[in-house]
Length: 180
Image (cartoon, rainbow, N blue to C red; front, side, top):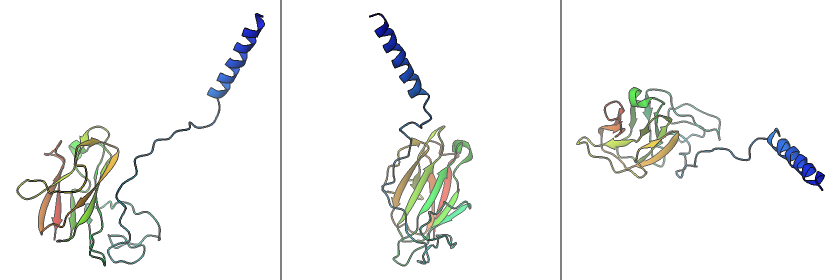
């Protein structure tokens, strides 16, 4: 009788050790939530595989955000603007936005993607009119800590320069949206 509990203990210990030392990966992974806004299709020229910056990419490939200091949106054949993208890199509270200037066309609504890569501080993105009031956009403009992405639908704007700021860091995270 005494050997049965001892044998059972040895068998359970062996099973637990085997389960803990197996080479398989855990049954879970982390993935960011999917965007509720579809990515713009095609580029400004309407040609297959053309990007908003005029370059070409293979059909069906994902487009990477522009790494230049000026983003640009141009109207497509349907009149809708291509999307713009702004990033808050790690340390953005002191280094600011990337890019610090973007531009789009007058009278055309557009999509603005805010990629918050900074996991050290919360940020948000608000576009301001000349009088300092916020431009009414569709999307959640509350501050959040990255990495995460928010997408905003911005209405057609009149010609001029608009500030885009982080309300948490308004003296260092200031950019210019030029509408022409």
